[in-house]
Length: 131
Image (cartoon, rainbow, N blue to C red; front, side, top):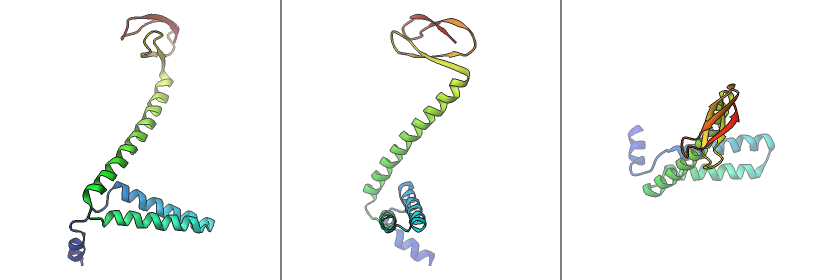
């Protein structure tokens, strides 16, 4: 049985991150459709499930690979934005972040030092701020 499945999958794309996520979203839609009794969600879930499995069994390897790469790029952009916000929130606990008035460079200064003179490392402009 295992050999038959292996022979069947030869030359086919297989499972990737996009197809896994499509199947997961379709399962979530099915659960919500059962809870809400919505036939529209049933249809969406079935269409997503068919699309996800058609990607898995597809023989057009280049097209499926390109779709997955675009999806992973989008996920990385979203993850980067969340990580940036998380980093900024952690930094705000211990540091102030000021922008240089002349060049706009962000400068990180520790909190609790009183009024200090800040020298921009990019343009050497000095300005006074409270830390």
